[in-house]
Length: 328
Image (cartoon, rainbow, N blue to C red; front, side):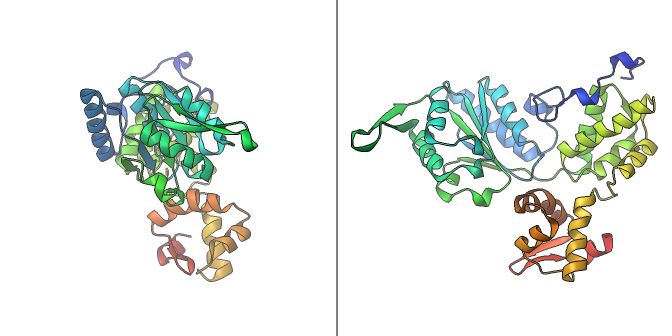
């Protein structure tokens, strides 16, 4: 519905991307994309509710920005239970986890983002908590130390990771529901962009929506971020709607090309092509040459470039394909 007054428009800068807000769906039917995952999740949740049994532990994995945190919150909403959100690096000692687990209510969700970054000590504490809903806690130190076993309420652990291979096999095997999120197709991204544009109070043309979708790297988080930046241009130019020209001009100014690649992607491709003859080149050498952390290269840059067929990972190192060379 078209908004006639600027007073009714929501300033995109007032919406923080890392918070649960109006841009994030609460119900599973409102979540766009990942249809097979949604269907299976609904079955598992409905079965849990109908049988009055605890929902099995869930591991959500895939590239960043695809909706892992949103799905965790949706599961909490659908189950009508509380969610306790934290991240792997937040646990510095065993007592941190024990304290958190002791405060989790019956049926609640414990959501651990970046679960692959848990230390071995924390992982070992999780094993009995996940299986028997008990955890051991050491009181005192030295010869007088004693171990107390604490019973905790039955809960569901939802882990999220971009690096499933870094999770130890014993921990990975304790998740009864593994769900892999994949990049979104343009049609799903178009719906997300259209919905969020309307929430901001702006009409957007079909062509403009498709152009943003094409340059969003198959990732909803990036699509929404690009939309917000385009709205910045619309606000400055006193525009009441978003058309293809505004989108193209804005994305060109942000140096997002037609395939969704940014300066860092092009720097990555150019480094391998110009400095290493197209590869192969090892990840540590590449990290040093780009002055970029290895995790950023592997988790943020490479997944989309591999999905586009621009780069290959081989035992000898990274190799740029002909398609990647032609694009650059």
